[in-house]
Length: 326
Image (cartoon, rainbow, N blue to C red; front, side):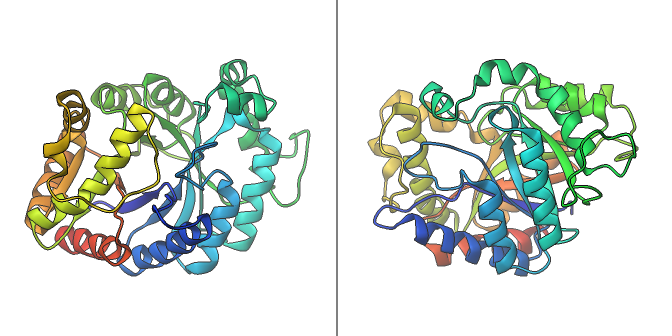
């Protein structure tokens, strides 16, 4: 079986605090490590009441101290929001703290609306135009090459695994051009998945990093002892998904029996549009659907998203998926 990893958005549960969410993320990372997962990634989002992962490097340091061997990384850093030198120093510091365990996934989307862009003092639309140059600049800070114009001791020579992230064809083209591993966000943008993977593989140029394409694909996965229990637990993330798409409150809510029956047709269609990139059920169902997804995509790795309100059930889901695919 190909390696499995976890994408955690660091969600706040209804009735809980940001401190609780961060503690739960650390505990979940330890559970993922114990279950044999390869990577534990968090993502940059700003100004969202239900998510507290915006300070990615700080969150990763927290996770790193709670674990001992699982790789920790960004899924991703939205580079148009940042100065490449600052990101190099942050992730070089993470590598110094957790050597050989740090991934740096880079995205071009702002991860925020214009209010947040203004607060960041960034013209993110213009900054996104320079994303390829910024990626190359960032690579240079980790390099040992003597001609690099700026040296920063904490970044120079850091053994960072850099990834290009994407939900469209642009990231696939850039990852192929630079010979970097590629991760596709199919868990929320499945439409271009197959075309993006084909673009990446067909145009890949070998580099010092990789001699052949390496693609990780995201999937929403939730496992429980039975299909019925899993569908019940999944109603929490379905509530969050509908709320996000309709502008409602986004803190994670407890599961609701028969939730799908309460939805309007367009809300139900929004959830069902993601059916091709999700596996929710008991061990047999999850194994069958994940295996079919891997066969369809030819993925080299899978990264699994999905949220569960009950934390014991969240950890159990990780174990059940790992056992089902062992």
